[in-house]
Length: 72
Image (cartoon, rainbow, N blue to C red; front, side):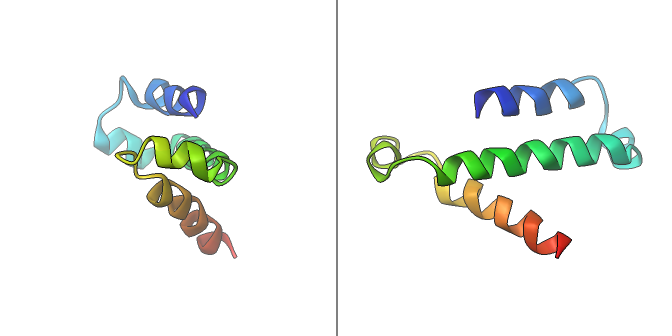
């Protein structure tokens, strides 16, 4: 998950919001990595999730599901 988050940061670190919105390929790369993070969250054990209750695990997972619903 950290690897995927770092990829998103690297894609976006030197561009502003307007440039981001104009670059479809960057939007798709970021969306792909967000989906991957959501998929990885779904593989975590309940015990691991319980150890870190301040992390919004289910929102991360649901973001993946939102992307999938948009492509169907």
